[in-house]
Amino acid sequence: MKIKAPGIFALIILVLFPVSIHAADSGPLRLDLETTVQRALNYSPELKAGKLNLKKAKLEYQRRKAENLLNQSQYAELEAEYNLAAARHTYKSLRDNLVNQAIQQYAKLYLAQLDLEIKELQTKLEDSKLQADTALYQLGDLTGIDLLEQENAYLDACFNREMAEEEVKEVRSDFLTLLGLAETASFSLADLEVPELWQITEEEAVELALKNSWEWKLQQKKVALIETDLKRTELSINTPALERQLKRIARQTAEIESAQKQKEIISSAQRAYFQFKQAMRRMTLWQDRLKAARKKYELKQEEYQGGFVSETEVLQYEVNRWETEYQYLAAVADYYLKEANLKALLNLKLEVEQHGQR
Image (cartoon, rainbow, N blue to C red; front, side, top):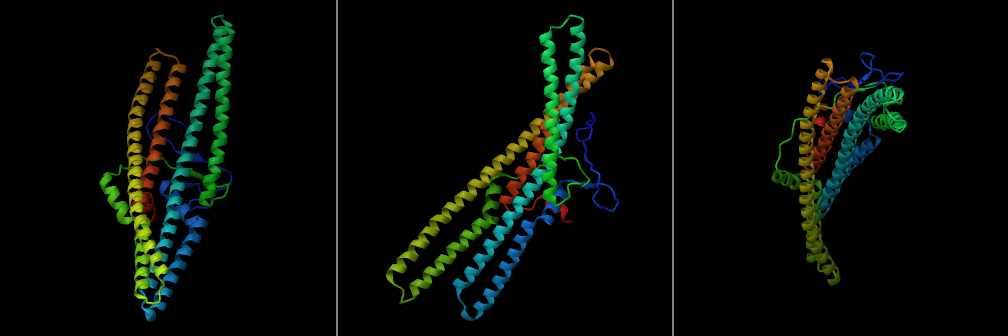
C-alpha cells in the first residue's frame, strides 16, 4: 500500500506473503467488510457449537411438546417455550458479538496499515528537515542544540514507524485467527467504504427494541410461567399455605423484574441511539475537515510547482492531509460499529450480513 494524493478512497491495502490462499484466479484473496463478516460467521467454532446447542434446544422443545400431548399441561408447554427462547437468545448474542468483532478487526487492520504509511511519510518528512538543518548547521546558521532536537525528532519518527510495523503484524495475526486463515495467507483488504447513513428516530429505536428484544420476550415468558405455576398451586387443595405464599411472592418479584427489565431495554436503546448519532456527527465533522486538509494540500502543491514553497513544506501538508484521512476513516469505522450495536439491540439485520447472504 502506498499513499497517493488523488481521491479520498483511493487507498487499497495489500498484505502479501509468500504462500497464497487457493482461489479461482490463484491470486490473493480479496476481502471487503461483507466477506470478512461472512467468513468469520462461517468459520467460528464457538458459533458452530452455539448453532448445535440451538438445534438441540429445538429438538428438546419438539420432544417436550410431543410428551405434553397427553398431559395437556400449560405449565409444561410454557416451560418448553421459555427454554427454547433462552437458547435462541444465547445464540443471537453469540452471533451479534462475532459480527461486531469481525467489523472491529477489519477496521483495525485497515487503519493499522494506513497508520504505517503515515508513519513512513512522517519519517520522510523528519529526514527532510534533518538534511535541511544539517546544511544550515554546516553554514553556521543553526545551533548544535537545534540540530540535536531535529535528530531526535527523526529518531522518534523511525521508532514510531517500527512500532507501527509491529502493530500491523499483531493485528494481522488476530484478523487471520478470527477468519480461520493461515499465517502465510495472501490477501488484500478493499477500501473501507463510507456507508449510507441509516435514518431512524429515537422513538422508533425504543419501539423496535421492546418489540424485537429477546430479553423482553424471555421476561414475558418467565412471568407467564410463574403465573401459570401460581394458578396450578392455588387450584391444588393439597398445597400448604406456606407454599402458596412463596408462589405469590415469586409472582410479585417477577412483575417487579419485568418492569425493571423494560426500563433497562429502553435505557439501553436510548444509550445505543445516542452513541450512534454521535458517531454519525463525528464522521460528518471529519469529512469536512478532510475536505479542508485536501484543499490546503492541493494549494501547497500548486505553490511548489510555482517555486514559492519548499518540498519539505509540501510534505508537511501531505502528512496533515493523511492524518486527517486517518481520523475520518476511523470515524467511519466507529459508525459501522455503533450502527451494528444499535441494530443488534433492535434485532435487525446489518447491511454487511444481508449483502453477504445474497
